[in-house]
Image 1 (cartoon, rainbow, N blue to C red):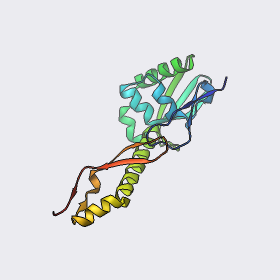
Image 2: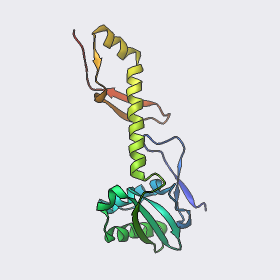
Image 3: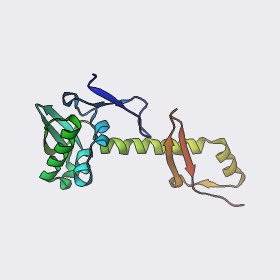
Image 4: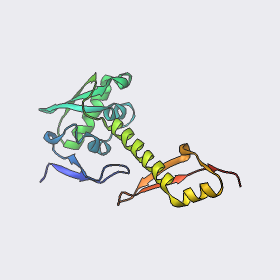
Length: 171
């Protein structure tokens, strides 16, 4: 059986699938973001996990690197909770040790922020390029409020859906 299983895309994710590690030896910084939604983690432990990346994986131990900006979240119980969730997923005893630093790889939280910002920019560009919106703005001497544009979702084809909640103009 293959050491990975494929996770479906979440809204805003790149078109390629992310391999979710099924075997402990396959765990890496690259697939950490795909694995986390499958772990039973909540609260502070989840926050620590999404703001960290595996720095090293060796002999039943995961060495996480937590972003310096998130250091105030960390306590020793986080390691225990993350280790317990990983142990259940991989069906073996795993230990976790976290240190504070600057990860070279993108953390899941940073990745999500990047994806959201990209989706938001795409939504704004789509609305501004829409011929019907431009016609309405021109007809009514309107002005588009960019901050009212919110990205909604990405379809299976990758097309951006967006909405505008307001524009102003004089009738």
